[in-house]
Amino acid sequence: WFVKKEPSPIVSTEKTKPTTFRIRTRLYPRSIKNDNTKMPLASLVKTMTVITALENNSNKQIIISKNTAKDTEGDFLKKDEVWDIFDLAKFTLVLSSNEGALALAESDTYFLNKMNQKALELGLYDSHFTNPIGLDDDGNYSSAYDLTLLGRYAYSKNFIKKAGGIKEMMRSMGRQRN
Image (tube, rainbow, N blue to C red; front, top):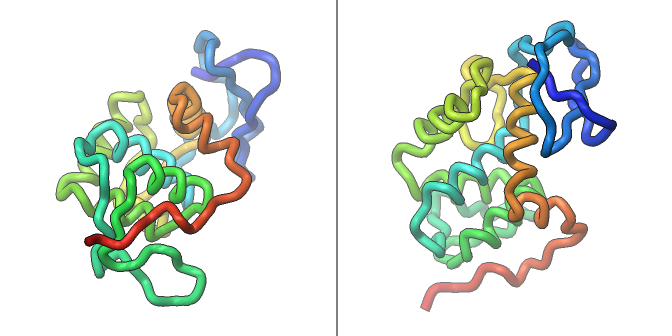
């Protein structure tokens, strides 16, 4: 199946033809060559990480652990900072932050299972997640078609739409624990 409508975001790889999708469209039988070829995901995994965190986490705040925090130049998360989950999700999406994705996932022992369960619920049958940040791994893959479905679902969420419009991010979101 593919989504047919006037042009909007395009999903394309070297092995696929461009696919367009709209939020409110009907699905039609697939006719795109190689649209179900399994390929590495890279940072697109973070979209599923944020969706999974927001839909499964009852905590409104995330405390940054020493495992997540890095002391290298350019990294923003510091040990024991307290972040609002929505701010951390925005931080993760806008900056494609590995540390943000790890902090969101670290709060739940079964996080990767939940990511893969959500993929099945969305019909992403050519997708599998083995880490929340998109590091290359033989078990971390998706297809152009599945990414189209994921993008369609993500864009139906107001939070994702708003985060997609952010052009600049301030460091002042996290705060030290008292």
